[in-house]
Length: 123
Length: 341
Length: 148
Image (cartoon, rainbow over all chains, first blue to last red; front, side):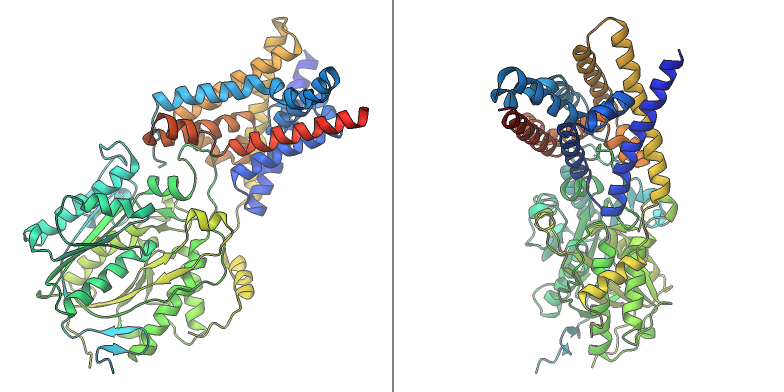
């Protein structure tokens, strides 16, 4: 029980911290959302490749995998795993293999949403 | 020597084209703002029964043209020209909105300054004897502008406090060689001014030097003093831009803080979450056609200097890292025929 | 008019007179909302694990569910309101990626099913895939070179 509570609190804290870092960047550098997303996914790949991000995932759980840096983590981890298994070819197959579910879901659900729904003005 | 020209930028009119009618239609947010009672109509849905924001914006313009013609109690074909513009690529709101009118048409682009540009060109056509009646129209639409210049509407992002809110609406006026005022007495055509601002979320700061430059030129060319006018009203500088304009002019010896007002600040209440204020081709046009024209007609204002301001950027120029060139056009509108020599 | 300022001076002056974002307030909001979205993710992760699914299936399913939530809130015109409040708190989590894919798809439906929805879907999220995938390939190649 206590362990589960800690798990949730860690996810909240680590996830919150990563998002806060994004907010400071938006406010201080005027980066647009697209640039923030690119920056975070790239940072995820780099930190994972350097062996840093695994430690954050071990502590933060979903707090580290749900933010976009976690997408970068999955990409890099997948690439490493496939390189170890299949050699150089794995560098090309691993990233997409590991993130296929998310990317496919985003494309498919978004398509359905676009067919069925309309944009609405902000008030 | 050009007898109607004063200084480098100002034209002094002698026939004094009269503004014989105006019309304005706005969106739901503008219809809840402080000027709500002055607009002819406020629609309650941004789509206005159309399938896209762009089609809706064209409809705004088409309906405003019909309305302003009927308010002037004239037939559509009594118009010699329509001069219109908007913010969309290739000015499609104007092109499609005017498509069925069957009147000689000039499509123009001056970003949010377009209504000023249209009034100047229309006045010049009448002054030159090429036209008797000219309609000037502009429109903007929050949703089509967001889509073209910023992000999809449903993208969850925050707006910067210096950002401005594009007005949904269209305003139109009819200029005529005959009429009982108010009259366009003189106008000052702006130059492009670029002080190196790149931030598309701070358009007020980009446009302020252009507004100050044109206002300064107006008084320099005409020799008038600012308090000749009851009000100097800029297009859509917003909070930040208005303050900068005051600063720039006062450091050039022109103090107009008491006279200066801004359409972008007039059309919305600060509680309406519009950050620095309103903007868009429809901003100055609807505030003039709705509020200012009413004040002039009722004699609450007798002489105004109307200075619509525009930021001449495009999404491509922003992506290529360009700075934002800006422009402001000043039009003097008075209830008496003025004092031009 | 005499421009008494250089462009450089003008930029400095503009920075001085322009209001800044309320960074402290925004960051706090981003922290709370971002943290909360991650807790929801943790909940699904734990649930799938309890069902006896392995690590890989669990994380794939969690992604799918979170993306479904992000797209649904976008379709119901709610995610933009959340984003206005939370800023990076709702941009950075994977639900924000879903929002970045769904929002242009919905917006550009008026330009048709192929060049509207199909092409514009990646207006904002495309760069994420371009840079994410490319960098993972580079990382993989380095790994390969270091091992051999």
